[in-house]
Amino acid sequence: MKNVKLANRYAKALYEFSLEQNSLEKVYQDSLFILNILKNNRELNFVMESPIIFNSKKSKIFAAIFGEYVDEISFRFLKLVLEKKREPALSLMLKEFAKYYYKFHHIKIADFITAQPVSEIVIEKVKLMIQEKTGATIQVKTTFNPEVIGGFIIKIDDFVFDNTILNNIYALKREFSYNIYQAGF
Image 1 (spheres, rainbow, N blue to C red):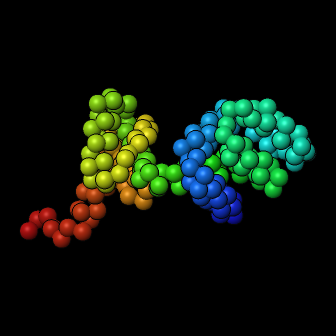
Image 2: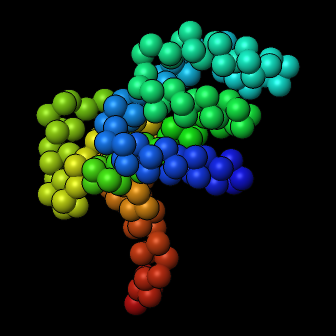
Image 3: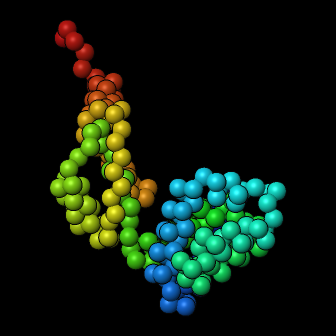
Protein backbone atom coordinates (compact mmCIF):
# COMPACT_ATOMS: atom_id res chain seq x y z
CA MET A 1 0.00 0.00 0.00
CA LYS A 2 2.83 2.36 0.85
CA ASN A 3 4.41 1.88 -2.58
CA VAL A 4 1.13 2.70 -4.33
CA LYS A 5 0.81 5.96 -2.39
CA LEU A 6 4.42 6.81 -3.13
CA ALA A 7 4.05 5.93 -6.81
CA ASN A 8 0.87 7.95 -7.03
CA ARG A 9 2.55 11.06 -5.62
CA TYR A 10 5.43 10.85 -8.09
CA ALA A 11 3.07 10.07 -10.99
CA LYS A 12 0.83 13.00 -10.17
CA ALA A 13 3.81 15.34 -9.98
CA LEU A 14 5.10 14.09 -13.34
CA TYR A 15 1.63 14.41 -14.86
CA GLU A 16 1.08 17.95 -13.62
CA PHE A 17 4.55 19.11 -14.63
CA SER A 18 4.34 17.57 -18.11
CA LEU A 19 0.87 19.10 -18.57
CA GLU A 20 2.20 22.47 -17.46
CA GLN A 21 5.12 22.17 -19.93
CA ASN A 22 2.81 21.02 -22.79
CA SER A 23 4.76 17.77 -23.05
CA LEU A 24 2.13 15.33 -21.85
CA GLU A 25 2.01 13.29 -25.07
CA LYS A 26 5.78 12.98 -25.32
CA VAL A 27 6.17 12.06 -21.65
CA TYR A 28 3.40 9.46 -22.00
CA GLN A 29 5.16 7.90 -25.01
CA ASP A 30 8.42 7.94 -23.04
CA SER A 31 6.73 6.24 -20.09
CA LEU A 32 5.48 3.46 -22.39
CA PHE A 33 8.98 3.12 -23.84
CA ILE A 34 10.60 2.95 -20.37
CA LEU A 35 8.00 0.47 -19.10
CA ASN A 36 8.62 -1.73 -22.14
CA ILE A 37 12.38 -1.67 -21.55
CA LEU A 38 11.92 -2.50 -17.86
CA LYS A 39 9.44 -5.27 -18.64
CA ASN A 40 11.70 -6.94 -21.19
CA ASN A 41 15.05 -6.52 -19.43
CA ARG A 42 15.42 -8.58 -16.30
CA GLU A 43 19.02 -7.54 -15.69
CA LEU A 44 18.06 -3.87 -15.63
CA ASN A 45 15.42 -4.63 -12.99
CA PHE A 46 18.04 -6.39 -10.87
CA VAL A 47 20.36 -3.40 -11.20
CA MET A 48 17.56 -0.98 -10.27
CA GLU A 49 16.53 -2.90 -7.18
CA SER A 50 20.04 -3.66 -5.99
CA PRO A 51 21.06 -1.66 -2.92
CA ILE A 52 24.69 -2.60 -3.56
CA ILE A 53 25.00 -0.66 -6.82
CA PHE A 54 25.63 3.04 -6.23
CA ASN A 55 23.24 5.63 -7.61
CA SER A 56 26.02 7.21 -9.66
CA LYS A 57 26.45 3.90 -11.52
CA LYS A 58 22.68 3.54 -11.95
CA SER A 59 22.53 7.09 -13.26
CA LYS A 60 25.17 6.30 -15.89
CA ILE A 61 23.27 3.17 -16.89
CA PHE A 62 20.02 5.12 -17.24
CA ALA A 63 21.80 7.84 -19.22
CA ALA A 64 23.21 5.25 -21.62
CA ILE A 65 19.89 3.47 -22.08
CA PHE A 66 17.40 6.34 -22.07
CA GLY A 67 19.44 9.55 -22.46
CA GLU A 68 19.05 10.16 -26.18
CA TYR A 69 15.69 8.41 -26.60
CA VAL A 70 13.46 10.20 -24.09
CA ASP A 71 12.35 13.79 -23.60
CA GLU A 72 14.25 16.01 -21.16
CA ILE A 73 11.32 16.01 -18.70
CA SER A 74 11.22 12.22 -18.67
CA PHE A 75 14.97 11.99 -18.19
CA ARG A 76 14.93 14.53 -15.36
CA PHE A 77 12.17 12.49 -13.73
CA LEU A 78 14.34 9.36 -13.96
CA LYS A 79 17.23 11.24 -12.37
CA LEU A 80 14.97 12.47 -9.55
CA VAL A 81 13.75 8.93 -8.89
CA LEU A 82 17.38 7.77 -8.67
CA GLU A 83 18.39 10.66 -6.39
CA LYS A 84 15.56 9.85 -3.99
CA LYS A 85 16.39 6.12 -4.16
CA ARG A 86 12.89 5.25 -5.36
CA GLU A 87 13.91 3.25 -8.43
CA PRO A 88 12.30 -0.03 -7.24
CA ALA A 89 8.91 1.73 -7.55
CA LEU A 90 9.63 3.22 -11.01
CA SER A 91 7.42 0.80 -12.95
CA LEU A 92 4.54 1.42 -10.57
CA MET A 93 5.06 5.19 -10.87
CA LEU A 94 4.86 5.01 -14.66
CA LYS A 95 1.72 2.85 -14.52
CA GLU A 96 0.11 5.37 -12.17
CA PHE A 97 1.15 8.15 -14.57
CA ALA A 98 -0.65 6.28 -17.36
CA LYS A 99 -3.81 6.31 -15.24
CA TYR A 100 -3.64 10.11 -15.00
CA TYR A 101 -3.07 10.28 -18.75
CA TYR A 102 -6.07 8.04 -19.42
CA LYS A 103 -8.26 10.09 -17.11
CA PHE A 104 -7.19 13.31 -18.85
CA HIS A 105 -8.01 11.87 -22.29
CA HIS A 106 -11.12 10.03 -21.04
CA ILE A 107 -9.69 6.63 -21.98
CA LYS A 108 -10.85 3.47 -20.24
CA ILE A 109 -9.26 0.03 -20.33
CA ALA A 110 -11.71 -2.83 -20.81
CA ASP A 111 -10.57 -6.33 -19.87
CA PHE A 112 -12.36 -8.76 -22.19
CA ILE A 113 -11.99 -12.30 -20.85
CA THR A 114 -13.09 -15.30 -22.92
CA ALA A 115 -12.47 -19.04 -22.91
CA GLN A 116 -11.14 -19.09 -26.49
CA PRO A 117 -9.46 -16.51 -28.72
CA VAL A 118 -11.98 -14.36 -30.57
CA SER A 119 -11.73 -12.56 -33.91
CA GLU A 120 -10.81 -8.91 -34.29
CA ILE A 121 -14.34 -8.26 -35.56
CA VAL A 122 -15.84 -9.40 -32.24
CA ILE A 123 -13.33 -7.34 -30.27
CA GLU A 124 -14.13 -4.27 -32.38
CA LYS A 125 -17.90 -4.77 -31.84
CA VAL A 126 -17.35 -5.07 -28.08
CA LYS A 127 -15.21 -1.95 -28.15
CA LEU A 128 -17.84 0.04 -30.06
CA MET A 129 -20.62 -1.18 -27.76
CA ILE A 130 -18.70 -0.12 -24.65
CA GLN A 131 -17.76 3.24 -26.19
CA GLU A 132 -21.42 3.86 -26.95
CA LYS A 133 -22.45 3.06 -23.36
CA THR A 134 -19.65 4.94 -21.57
CA GLY A 135 -18.91 7.80 -23.94
CA ALA A 136 -15.20 7.16 -23.36
CA THR A 137 -12.47 6.01 -25.69
CA ILE A 138 -11.96 2.32 -25.01
CA GLN A 139 -8.83 0.20 -25.24
CA VAL A 140 -9.66 -3.50 -25.14
CA LYS A 141 -7.25 -5.89 -23.45
CA THR A 142 -8.13 -9.49 -24.26
CA THR A 143 -7.39 -12.40 -21.97
CA PHE A 144 -8.13 -16.08 -22.48
CA ASN A 145 -9.13 -18.15 -19.47
CA PRO A 146 -10.32 -21.74 -20.03
CA GLU A 147 -12.12 -21.67 -16.66
CA VAL A 148 -14.65 -19.29 -18.20
CA ILE A 149 -16.07 -22.34 -20.09
CA GLY A 150 -18.27 -20.22 -22.38
CA GLY A 151 -19.37 -16.63 -22.67
CA PHE A 152 -17.30 -13.65 -21.61
CA ILE A 153 -16.45 -11.24 -18.80
CA ILE A 154 -15.94 -7.51 -19.32
CA LYS A 155 -14.21 -5.49 -16.60
CA ILE A 156 -14.02 -1.70 -16.74
CA ASP A 157 -12.78 0.11 -13.65
CA ASP A 158 -15.00 -1.26 -10.84
CA PHE A 159 -17.75 -2.54 -13.15
CA VAL A 160 -17.85 -6.26 -14.03
CA PHE A 161 -20.26 -7.74 -16.56
CA ASP A 162 -20.14 -11.52 -16.23
CA ASN A 163 -21.99 -13.35 -18.99
CA THR A 164 -20.33 -16.73 -18.61
CA ILE A 165 -22.00 -20.12 -18.53
CA LEU A 166 -20.50 -20.72 -15.09
CA ASN A 167 -22.04 -17.51 -13.73
CA ASN A 168 -25.42 -18.41 -15.26
CA ILE A 169 -25.27 -21.85 -13.60
CA TYR A 170 -24.53 -20.21 -10.22
CA ALA A 171 -27.44 -17.80 -10.75
CA LEU A 172 -29.79 -20.70 -11.47
CA LYS A 173 -28.48 -22.55 -8.43
CA ARG A 174 -29.15 -19.51 -6.22
CA GLU A 175 -32.61 -19.08 -7.72
CA PHE A 176 -33.54 -22.72 -7.10
CA SER A 177 -32.22 -22.58 -3.53
CA TYR A 178 -34.80 -19.85 -2.76
CA ASN A 179 -37.65 -21.54 -4.66
CA ILE A 180 -40.53 -22.42 -2.35
CA TYR A 181 -41.95 -25.05 -4.70
CA GLN A 182 -42.08 -28.49 -3.14
CA ALA A 183 -42.42 -31.62 -5.23
CA GLY A 184 -45.32 -34.03 -4.63
CA PHE A 185 -48.10 -31.50 -4.01
